[in-house]
Length: 192
Image (cartoon, rainbow, N blue to C red; front, side, top):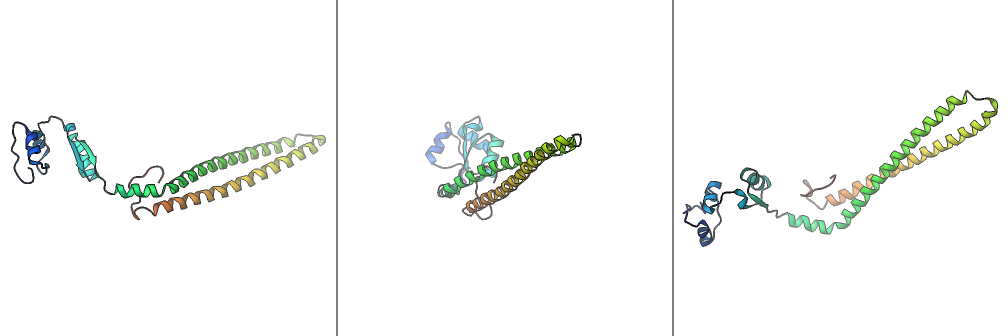
């Protein structure tokens, strides 16, 4: 049907559509394929504004090429242009968080390795004589100082990590305030 009028098939179905200047609505895909004289759904471009009801079902069920009309996209793009600096800030803060995570992991590993070395040297110290005691005592002080330094660096890095994560959270929240209060941005990427 074309707006409630029965379809009159002619020898050249395109003549009818071009002559009438109408859009096919109602009916079913078999009538449309017959009207257009086509064999394959891939010869049709279906335009719709509902992701599932129009685009996905037409593509999956009938093999039609589809186009999604998204009126809200204009607003999304405008927000994207207006918030480029916030996107850049979020990207920088994500990279900083990743670098700090690597630093914290490396310091934790170094502290654990240092504890293993320190505890194994204490066990082996019981086998030494009095002449070696002074040398080992100084080495133990150095190891203890190194371990304390590692723990201090680890604590500072963990504090830095918390501050970086908080700054990233604030930047993401600032960006989110520009979008819909419930759904946020329509098109999301990354770890949002």
